[in-house]
Image (tube, rainbow, N blue to C red; front, side, top):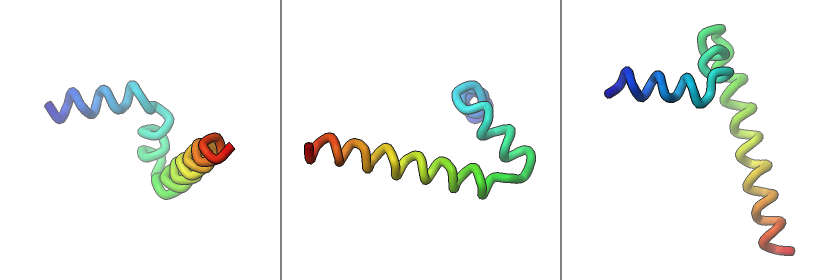
Length: 49
């Protein structure tokens, strides 16, 4: 099960797994966090409008 989950995750987000292999996991997490915040802000903006 774990192996299948890992494979599916690699297929879904290949650049993230590659970043973790390079040791830039912190940078990747920061970028993902920023994207999530921007998406949430956009959704809230649409709801307000």
